[in-house]
Image (cartoon, rainbow, N blue to C red; front, top):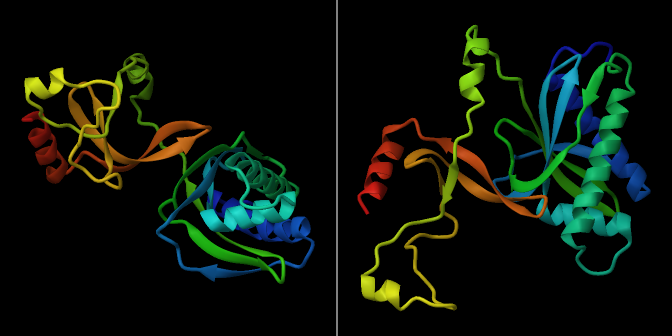
Length: 244
C-alpha cells in the first residue's frame, strides 16, 4: 500500500495484519476469508487514529473465538478469565496496528491507546474468519468512524459545549403503593416490568435523549448508544414514561 488515502485504507490493512499476527502467535500459517457480519455480542477494541488520517477504528472479536484464541496463546487450562482474554486481544491488536504503521506510506499514521469493552459489531464493519489449521480460529470484524466535521460556529459554541450536564441511565420505572414502598428492605426484589435485553434510557434531566445497550468498559458498566431520541416513537415513549 503506497499511499494512505483514508481511514478505510488503514482498517483494511489492519485486517491483513491481524491475520499475519494471528498466524505468528499461534505458530502456523493463518488464512482469512470474508464472513457475514454477526448479530451477537463480543469484545471490542476502539483505536483513535490521528496524523495522516483521522478517525477511529474498532476491532470486534466474537466471544467464543476470543476465548479460544486467548487460551491458545496463554496456554491456560479451561476457559480463560476476562482479564486474560482482554490482554490477549489488546496485544494482538497492538501488534497488528504496529505492523500497519511499519508499512510504506503509513509512518505518519498515529494510534492512541485502545479502549476495551464488550458489545455488538459496529455499524458498517467488515467481518472475516481467520483460521490456523489444527490450532484455533477467530471471527472478527473491523469498522471505522470518520472524524466529525466541525461547524463554522464551533468556536462560538465552545463555552456552551463545556457546560457539564448530568447524564442518567434509566433501567426502568415502576409504580408502587406507599405500603409496598414502606415494606422494602434488604433482599427485596422490585419488578421493573421490562426484559434485561431491552435497551436502557439515557436522560439529561428528565428528557430522554437516546437509548442504548449495557456494556462493560474496563471493569465498569457503560452504555453503547444504539438509537438517538430524534423520532416520534421515542418521543411518545418518553411522554408515556413521564406519565408514570
